[in-house]
Amino acid sequence: MDMTATQPECYRHPGRETGVSCTRCERPVCPECRVDAAVGFQCRDCVRGAGAGTRVARTEFGGGLVRDGALVTKILIGINVVVWLLGWKVLSTAELNRLYLWGPGVAAGQWYRVVTSVFLHTWLPHLLMNMWSLWVLGPPLERLLGRWRFLALYLVSGLAGSALVLLAAPQTFTLGASGAIFGLLGALLVIQRKRGGALGPIVAIVVVNLVATFSIPGISWEAHIGGLVAGLLIGFGLAHAPQRNRVLVQAGTVLVVLAAVLVATLAGVAGLN
Image (cartoon, rainbow, N blue to C red; front, side, top):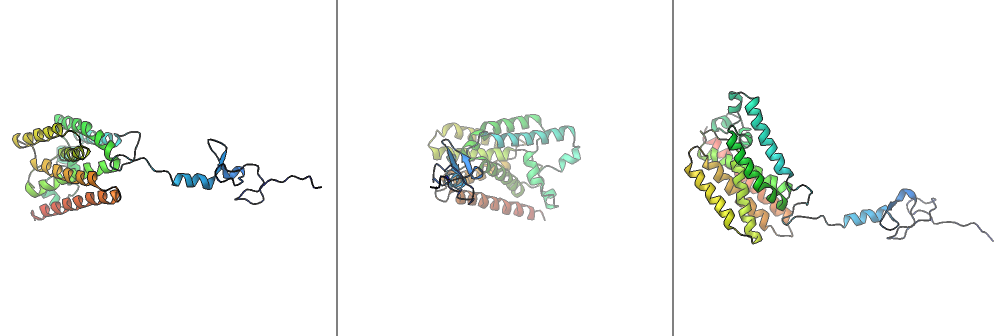
Protein backbone atom coordinates (compact mmCIF):
# COMPACT_ATOMS: atom_id res chain seq x y z
CA MET A 1 0.00 0.00 0.00
CA ASP A 2 1.33 3.43 -0.96
CA MET A 3 1.77 5.43 2.28
CA THR A 4 2.86 8.65 0.52
CA ALA A 5 0.54 11.53 1.54
CA THR A 6 -0.11 14.24 -1.03
CA GLN A 7 -1.59 17.72 -0.50
CA PRO A 8 -3.71 19.76 -2.89
CA GLU A 9 -1.98 22.08 -5.30
CA CYS A 10 -2.34 25.88 -5.29
CA TYR A 11 -5.14 26.95 -7.62
CA ARG A 12 -2.87 29.54 -9.24
CA HIS A 13 0.40 27.59 -9.23
CA PRO A 14 -0.05 23.97 -10.25
CA GLY A 15 2.71 21.85 -8.74
CA ARG A 16 2.91 23.80 -5.49
CA GLU A 17 1.43 21.69 -2.75
CA THR A 18 -0.24 23.45 0.16
CA GLY A 19 -2.26 22.55 3.18
CA VAL A 20 -3.97 25.96 3.42
CA SER A 21 -7.27 26.89 1.78
CA CYS A 22 -9.08 30.21 1.29
CA THR A 23 -11.69 30.68 3.98
CA ARG A 24 -14.12 32.17 1.42
CA CYS A 25 -13.89 29.97 -1.67
CA GLU A 26 -12.00 27.04 -0.09
CA ARG A 27 -9.48 26.86 -2.94
CA PRO A 28 -5.98 25.80 -1.93
CA VAL A 29 -3.49 28.69 -1.78
CA CYS A 30 0.29 28.73 -1.53
CA PRO A 31 2.15 31.31 0.62
CA GLU A 32 2.47 33.65 -2.39
CA CYS A 33 -1.25 33.65 -3.13
CA ARG A 34 -2.77 33.97 0.33
CA VAL A 35 -3.59 37.10 2.30
CA ASP A 36 -4.05 37.26 6.06
CA ALA A 37 -7.69 37.60 7.05
CA ALA A 38 -9.49 38.05 10.36
CA VAL A 39 -9.84 34.27 10.46
CA GLY A 40 -7.35 32.18 8.46
CA PHE A 41 -6.37 33.27 4.95
CA GLN A 42 -8.08 34.41 1.76
CA CYS A 43 -6.97 34.09 -1.85
CA ARG A 44 -6.07 37.25 -3.74
CA ASP A 45 -9.09 36.93 -6.05
CA CYS A 46 -11.51 36.94 -3.11
CA VAL A 47 -9.73 39.92 -1.54
CA ARG A 48 -10.01 41.87 -4.80
CA GLY A 49 -13.65 40.92 -5.21
CA ALA A 50 -14.50 42.01 -1.68
CA GLY A 51 -12.77 45.34 -2.25
CA ALA A 52 -14.63 45.93 -5.52
CA GLY A 53 -17.94 45.42 -3.79
CA THR A 54 -17.21 47.83 -0.95
CA ARG A 55 -19.08 51.12 -1.17
CA VAL A 56 -17.02 54.23 -0.57
CA ALA A 57 -18.40 56.34 2.28
CA ARG A 58 -19.81 59.61 0.97
CA THR A 59 -21.00 62.88 2.42
CA GLU A 60 -24.61 63.99 2.16
CA PHE A 61 -23.95 65.64 -1.21
CA GLY A 62 -21.58 63.09 -2.71
CA GLY A 63 -18.11 64.07 -1.50
CA GLY A 64 -15.70 61.50 -0.13
CA LEU A 65 -15.40 61.29 3.65
CA VAL A 66 -11.92 62.37 4.73
CA ARG A 67 -10.11 62.73 8.03
CA ASP A 68 -9.42 66.46 7.67
CA GLY A 69 -12.62 68.13 6.53
CA ALA A 70 -11.02 71.57 6.38
CA LEU A 71 -7.89 70.85 4.34
CA VAL A 72 -8.89 72.86 1.25
CA THR A 73 -10.02 75.75 3.44
CA LYS A 74 -6.63 75.80 5.16
CA ILE A 75 -4.81 75.70 1.82
CA LEU A 76 -6.87 78.59 0.45
CA ILE A 77 -6.22 80.65 3.56
CA GLY A 78 -2.52 79.81 3.30
CA ILE A 79 -2.38 80.95 -0.34
CA ASN A 80 -4.07 84.25 0.53
CA VAL A 81 -1.70 84.87 3.43
CA VAL A 82 1.39 84.00 1.37
CA VAL A 83 0.29 86.34 -1.44
CA TRP A 84 -0.26 89.11 1.10
CA LEU A 85 3.21 88.53 2.60
CA LEU A 86 4.74 88.65 -0.89
CA GLY A 87 3.01 91.93 -1.56
CA TRP A 88 4.10 93.36 1.77
CA LYS A 89 7.72 92.18 1.78
CA VAL A 90 8.78 91.25 -1.75
CA LEU A 91 6.82 92.85 -4.57
CA SER A 92 7.10 96.46 -5.62
CA THR A 93 4.09 98.73 -6.07
CA ALA A 94 4.37 98.36 -9.85
CA GLU A 95 4.44 94.57 -9.57
CA LEU A 96 1.43 94.59 -7.26
CA ASN A 97 -0.50 96.76 -9.68
CA ARG A 98 -0.07 94.04 -12.30
CA LEU A 99 -1.96 91.58 -10.07
CA TYR A 100 -5.12 93.70 -9.58
CA LEU A 101 -8.18 93.09 -11.68
CA TRP A 102 -8.19 95.92 -14.22
CA GLY A 103 -10.10 95.74 -17.48
CA PRO A 104 -7.57 97.45 -19.77
CA GLY A 105 -4.83 95.18 -18.44
CA VAL A 106 -6.92 92.07 -19.14
CA ALA A 107 -7.78 93.39 -22.60
CA ALA A 108 -4.03 93.83 -23.21
CA GLY A 109 -3.52 90.10 -22.67
CA GLN A 110 -2.96 89.95 -18.89
CA TRP A 111 -5.65 87.33 -18.34
CA TYR A 112 -4.02 86.11 -15.16
CA ARG A 113 -5.47 89.20 -13.43
CA VAL A 114 -8.92 87.57 -13.20
CA VAL A 115 -7.36 84.87 -10.98
CA THR A 116 -4.59 86.68 -9.08
CA SER A 117 -6.96 89.41 -7.96
CA VAL A 118 -9.10 86.82 -6.14
CA PHE A 119 -6.13 85.95 -3.89
CA LEU A 120 -4.73 89.48 -3.51
CA HIS A 121 -5.14 91.72 -0.45
CA THR A 122 -3.02 94.77 0.27
CA TRP A 123 -4.80 96.06 3.40
CA LEU A 124 -4.33 93.81 6.44
CA PRO A 125 -7.85 94.31 7.91
CA HIS A 126 -9.28 93.37 4.51
CA LEU A 127 -7.27 90.14 4.54
CA LEU A 128 -8.19 89.30 8.15
CA MET A 129 -11.90 89.91 7.56
CA ASN A 130 -12.01 87.73 4.45
CA MET A 131 -9.93 84.94 5.98
CA TRP A 132 -12.06 84.92 9.12
CA SER A 133 -15.16 84.60 6.93
CA LEU A 134 -13.52 81.79 4.96
CA TRP A 135 -12.60 79.97 8.16
CA VAL A 136 -16.18 80.24 9.46
CA LEU A 137 -17.92 79.25 6.21
CA GLY A 138 -15.36 76.94 4.63
CA PRO A 139 -15.10 73.87 6.90
CA PRO A 140 -18.86 73.20 7.21
CA LEU A 141 -19.31 73.45 3.44
CA GLU A 142 -16.18 71.43 2.72
CA ARG A 143 -17.38 68.61 4.98
CA LEU A 144 -20.81 68.59 3.35
CA LEU A 145 -19.68 68.86 -0.27
CA GLY A 146 -16.28 67.17 -0.25
CA ARG A 147 -13.01 68.76 -1.24
CA TRP A 148 -13.34 69.00 -5.02
CA ARG A 149 -16.90 70.31 -5.03
CA PHE A 150 -16.02 72.89 -2.41
CA LEU A 151 -12.91 74.00 -4.31
CA ALA A 152 -14.90 74.33 -7.56
CA LEU A 153 -17.54 76.39 -5.75
CA TYR A 154 -14.92 78.75 -4.31
CA LEU A 155 -12.92 79.26 -7.49
CA VAL A 156 -15.85 79.65 -9.90
CA SER A 157 -17.55 82.10 -7.51
CA GLY A 158 -14.36 84.16 -7.38
CA LEU A 159 -14.11 84.15 -11.17
CA ALA A 160 -17.78 85.14 -11.41
CA GLY A 161 -17.05 88.19 -9.28
CA SER A 162 -14.21 89.14 -11.62
CA ALA A 163 -16.48 88.65 -14.65
CA LEU A 164 -19.16 91.03 -13.39
CA VAL A 165 -16.50 93.62 -12.57
CA LEU A 166 -15.23 93.43 -16.15
CA LEU A 167 -18.78 93.83 -17.44
CA ALA A 168 -19.96 96.64 -15.18
CA ALA A 169 -16.85 98.48 -13.98
CA PRO A 170 -13.88 97.45 -16.13
CA GLN A 171 -11.86 100.62 -15.45
CA THR A 172 -11.71 100.11 -11.67
CA PHE A 173 -8.88 98.37 -9.82
CA THR A 174 -10.36 95.46 -7.88
CA LEU A 175 -8.89 92.83 -5.56
CA GLY A 176 -9.84 90.46 -2.76
CA ALA A 177 -11.52 87.14 -2.01
CA SER A 178 -14.89 88.72 -1.25
CA GLY A 179 -16.54 87.42 -4.44
CA ALA A 180 -15.58 83.85 -3.53
CA ILE A 181 -16.75 84.39 0.07
CA PHE A 182 -20.14 85.63 -1.19
CA GLY A 183 -20.28 82.51 -3.34
CA LEU A 184 -19.90 80.37 -0.22
CA LEU A 185 -22.69 82.34 1.45
CA GLY A 186 -25.00 81.80 -1.52
CA ALA A 187 -24.31 78.08 -1.66
CA LEU A 188 -24.73 77.71 2.11
CA LEU A 189 -28.12 79.42 1.89
CA VAL A 190 -29.36 76.96 -0.75
CA ILE A 191 -27.87 73.92 0.98
CA GLN A 192 -29.30 74.89 4.36
CA ARG A 193 -32.73 75.24 2.78
CA LYS A 194 -32.40 71.81 1.14
CA ARG A 195 -31.46 70.25 4.49
CA GLY A 196 -34.40 71.90 6.23
CA GLY A 197 -32.23 73.96 8.57
CA ALA A 198 -32.87 77.41 9.97
CA LEU A 199 -32.40 80.08 7.30
CA GLY A 200 -32.75 83.16 9.50
CA PRO A 201 -29.11 83.50 10.60
CA ILE A 202 -27.73 82.97 7.08
CA VAL A 203 -30.24 85.35 5.49
CA ALA A 204 -29.32 87.95 8.10
CA ILE A 205 -25.62 87.59 7.31
CA VAL A 206 -26.29 87.93 3.57
CA VAL A 207 -28.48 91.00 4.10
CA VAL A 208 -25.96 92.71 6.40
CA ASN A 209 -23.16 92.07 3.93
CA LEU A 210 -25.23 93.38 1.02
CA VAL A 211 -26.12 96.55 2.96
CA ALA A 212 -22.42 97.07 3.70
CA THR A 213 -21.58 96.40 0.07
CA PHE A 214 -23.84 99.15 -1.25
CA SER A 215 -23.34 101.67 1.56
CA ILE A 216 -19.59 101.69 2.20
CA PRO A 217 -17.55 103.55 -0.44
CA GLY A 218 -14.77 101.66 -2.15
CA ILE A 219 -16.39 98.22 -2.01
CA SER A 220 -16.88 96.44 -5.32
CA TRP A 221 -20.55 95.47 -5.37
CA GLU A 222 -19.94 93.84 -8.76
CA ALA A 223 -17.55 91.26 -7.30
CA HIS A 224 -19.89 90.54 -4.40
CA ILE A 225 -23.02 90.14 -6.51
CA GLY A 226 -21.22 88.11 -9.16
CA GLY A 227 -19.90 85.70 -6.54
CA LEU A 228 -23.25 85.49 -4.76
CA VAL A 229 -25.18 84.63 -7.94
CA ALA A 230 -22.63 81.98 -8.92
CA GLY A 231 -22.76 80.49 -5.42
CA LEU A 232 -26.55 80.31 -5.49
CA LEU A 233 -26.57 78.57 -8.88
CA ILE A 234 -23.79 76.11 -8.09
CA GLY A 235 -25.20 75.45 -4.63
CA PHE A 236 -28.59 74.62 -6.16
CA GLY A 237 -27.02 72.14 -8.57
CA LEU A 238 -24.92 70.50 -5.88
CA ALA A 239 -27.76 70.25 -3.38
CA HIS A 240 -30.60 69.17 -5.69
CA ALA A 241 -28.77 66.76 -8.00
CA PRO A 242 -30.67 63.44 -8.19
CA GLN A 243 -29.03 60.46 -6.52
CA ARG A 244 -28.87 58.41 -9.71
CA ASN A 245 -26.84 60.85 -11.82
CA ARG A 246 -25.54 63.03 -9.03
CA VAL A 247 -21.94 63.41 -10.16
CA LEU A 248 -22.96 64.16 -13.75
CA VAL A 249 -25.52 66.80 -12.75
CA GLN A 250 -23.19 68.41 -10.22
CA ALA A 251 -20.28 68.57 -12.63
CA GLY A 252 -22.58 69.83 -15.37
CA THR A 253 -23.87 72.62 -13.14
CA VAL A 254 -20.35 73.79 -12.31
CA LEU A 255 -19.33 73.68 -15.99
CA VAL A 256 -22.43 75.59 -17.14
CA VAL A 257 -21.83 78.34 -14.58
CA LEU A 258 -18.13 78.43 -15.50
CA ALA A 259 -19.05 78.73 -19.18
CA ALA A 260 -21.37 81.65 -18.39
CA VAL A 261 -18.56 83.27 -16.41
CA LEU A 262 -16.17 82.90 -19.34
CA VAL A 263 -18.71 84.39 -21.75
CA ALA A 264 -19.28 87.35 -19.42
CA THR A 265 -15.52 87.82 -19.06
CA LEU A 266 -15.01 87.82 -22.81
CA ALA A 267 -17.94 90.21 -23.29
CA GLY A 268 -16.50 92.59 -20.74
CA VAL A 269 -13.08 92.54 -22.37
CA ALA A 270 -14.62 92.94 -25.85
CA GLY A 271 -16.34 96.09 -24.69
CA LEU A 272 -12.94 97.67 -24.03
CA ASN A 273 -11.66 97.10 -27.54
